Structures are given as structure tokens and as C-alpha cells.
Image (cartoon, rainbow, N blue to C red; front, side, top):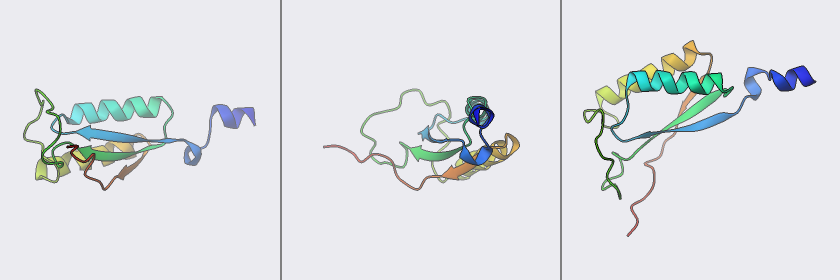
Length: 106
């Protein structure tokens, strides 16, 4: 039992919510995040895209690294595909959350 606790089967490893905040997404960042999650022992993730699909967003995200990445654009889907492929390569599960993020507070 101790060995199973120290090295749990893949189907019992925890998952994380993985938030993509606006236009701050790169393929290198995706790969780095997924490698870190895999090394930490997580079994999967649920990617949730936020910020640019909540209009207007209640707080600016300054200095976006990739302003051409907007949710549901071709560039964005290319990165989602990359994340799915990298997850598969690393033996991790990949999911996509369906939600626009946080509502604007008035």
C-alpha cells in the first residue's frame, strides 16, 4: 500500500484548473507549464480561458506578450491544439472548461 501511495496509478492523480489569462499565452509557456505539472505529479488539467472573452474585463492585463491571441481565434485554437498534444506527449489528461470567467463587478 505504501508503494501505491508514493507512486499512485495515473487514474488517481489529481487534476488542476489551468487558467489562460488573456493574451499572455505562448507555446513555450504551455510546454513549460505542462512539464511542471507533470513533474509535480498531476494527472491532468482543465484549461480555462479568461480575460479577453469577458468584455469589458474589470481590470487590465498590462503588457500582453501575445496581443494577437484572442479566445476562439485561429491562433488561440492552434495553442489549444498544442496544449492537447503536449499533454498527450507527457502522459497527462487535458480538458477544456466552458466558461467566460469572472463577471464584471459594478
